[in-house]
Image 1 (cartoon, rainbow, N blue to C red):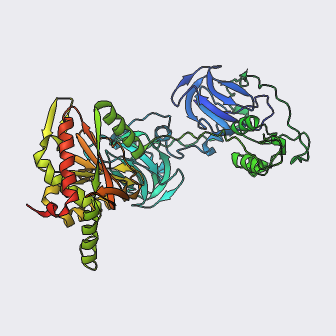
Image 2 (image 1 turned 30 degrees about the vertical axis):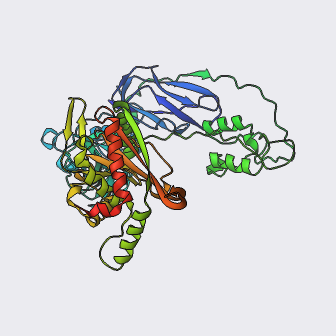
Length: 564
């Protein structure tokens, strides 16, 4: 068996490179001669590339969207006979060199996701073939009792040398992000999975080349000695790659823009270098690339160069009005952002809550003048002590905790799959917190057992842990009712989304000075709207209104918060 390296052919467009649009094969496939293996795109045409030989696909080079140079390796086949790469294939870089074929397959994003065979099932290497070993680091059980985790991001790339305990990747379980570190020192030869993908516990995560044996034994076949020229085996009979061009739809004719004093940045007849995406965008903008300076290698034009050309008032761009004022330019670029990590989890939770829960919203206006005076007095009195500074949340939490025993249908979790409402005596208070990775809801356990300072301390501690990504699963689950607050950005009113499977959520809005009528006089008071949402399957409108009115009474007469 030999190796056959199929290189990207000149597809007749006079270009030095082309964009890989998509693959029709994957590693391990058996292909026939003239079978379509890939689509590539030149300036104006998509071209189907077919296989010049029959054989097994060992590796593919290039991801969809990447540029490949004409003459660069595209696909490596295992073929009958000597192939065309008996001597130089070993030197050609591959994503997992010098790991064996099995490990290399595991390293490719489109390769099989198989677990690495146990060491006793692998063939032992020859004593004289011992060299650097292969170490497969598998996704560990991160202690959350889950069978899989989402890959959030990589801290290393293929080719990096890492030290023991160096950070490799971030993975996310239900709502906790976990940092994974390397158990060994070595060179990264393969990464498994893309950010946003789900990985099973125990599946390969990183392949490393290490000193010594490693944990995966591999066979290393020595390259055969070159045979004398006279006795050389004949090469496998091949034929040039066949290409079937599919002309792109004709571009609608447009009047060429006046060039005026536009200057050429290239010699006449010299074709500007740019990717198909850049060329398409230039056509949309009515820009001739011949006049756009390129900042990339060999003068290659990128999107930044187009932006700079447009901002400088380059010709071929539509201007507003007939005068010579500043250019108003359409911005047609669209960025596709994959929703992963905490944002994806939040999206799923919100969708589930709105789909399953019939929300109804209730808002009430509260005079918090006396409450704000008390809060300011306590903070001034406690200045310089170890007591925490108080904001509105501990007072609101205390008012809710004192009221919930009279409205127990509001404090619980509804298992709508089984038709069971779990009604709690204790209050496990969720506090919605905005973090750098998205929305989290840390939980104050048994909030009824804490005084106002204990609540303030625990809310601050949990919020800091959530923002730092250090909150545990227990600290992020099990709430029975939630408070959501946007602080000074709270607006006048909002409709909070219930944290499923809870049945209620309460959200204060911003406090503003407002003129109100009090005892027949127009006076300025500190007013706040309190927004709330309830699950109408469990909570009736009357009960919800009565609950909020009792909370209002406690907040408007704050001394009653501390009376038994």
